[in-house]
Length: 372
Image (cartoon, rainbow, N blue to C red; front, side):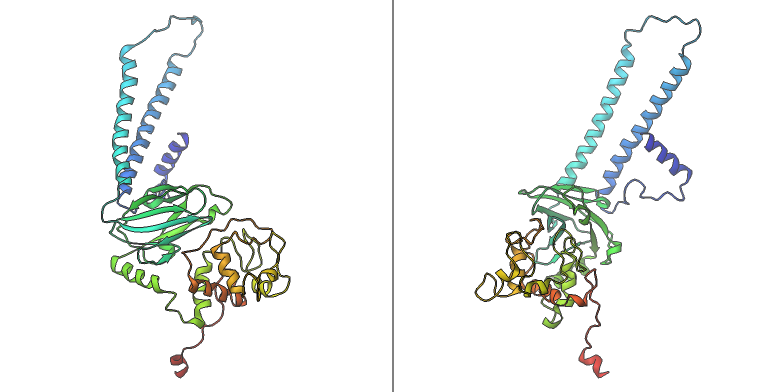
């Protein structure tokens, strides 16, 4: 409580340097107003009683402090009916009022409207995957403005929690269960990531927990509809020869929490030199003592390195590279053959990418550009 009072005094003393989102991010959803109202009501009730209790305590200390000649023992007051009723009934009525308004807001938060736009959100160690009704997928959450959106939440592994502070919504994601939350944002942000609203995992889920930060990007309905169509077919629109450098980095962004491209070991093996390891006798070894050469080749489990990569993405615990553990979730149903082709192409041309997975070469000139 003292920290709250100190913050309020600081805000009153220096309003020009105290941001509007000092306590919470500026509300950006239709639910935010009611949540903020309850937050402020409870806060100011606490401030009021804090001042009353401390003031009375100080007054009693000063008025009834011990003085020379004061008897050590005095007759105590047994009870005071009016006071006892006051300090029992008044707080009870306040708590009932808080419960009434809080419960009404809670019911609103857990009851989505009938015209919601559904997005399937899957949490995994350590990232998010958002899937839309037409099959489109994205790493950041993209939603239409002015329309209720319901996130259907699932976990691939452990307990997670979806939290969007600016929308004042938060929901646990429990393995084996389907939960949901809904919101409506009426203020478009565009597709620029720096303008979006933060989405966090608010439940500690392991060493890569801090990598589960994403953005919520809000588009006007017409722009969202256009984005949704393009997002569903973006891989198919890229020519085969350009797939590895146009699609590879975008897909790698989902892998970068665990796999580096600069030789640094993370939660999984680095991609640097991976194609050499896959095609060189001996190569890296698995936890069962086998090497890549034991698994890849004519008459072996995998005919080509590409086959091994595909199976490792769909069944990551099947062959564990030593000394790494089995922490990778499956991407079956999330990454199709075209996406895996982009990944394997990027691995084969990794010298063309920087440590963050960005392509560093100049794109080939188009025939029109060469003609000019």
